Length: 97
Image 1 (cartoon, rainbow, N blue to C red):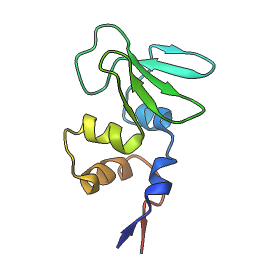
Image 2 (tube, rainbow, N blue to C red; image 1 turned 180 degrees about the horizontal axis):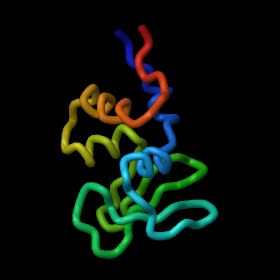
Image 3 (cartoon, one colour; image 1 turned 90 degrees about the vertical axis):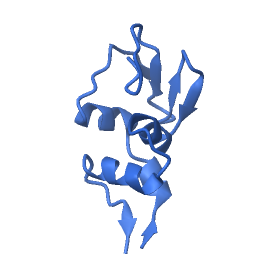
Image 4 (cartoon, rainbow, N blue to C red; image 1 turned 60 degrees about the vertical axis):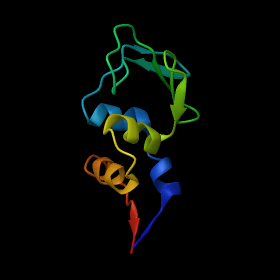
């Protein structure tokens, strides 16, 4: 079984966060601002670019794609575990048979 990472990375981060119940604090034309979904964050410092579909944590200076976000949110480096979590909330075909 081969994983199509390109397909996974195209999954909309903003849509994924919405599906798992994480709501933005502010919506801007080019990005959306949240409280970080993987740590205590009193002041919204988690930014997701609408155009690039990448996130950036202004407080920790970490950034990445949806897989990197999954690693942080689910506290794992096991990419297959991250993919299983993502697949539970998306209709995208993540695995090629």
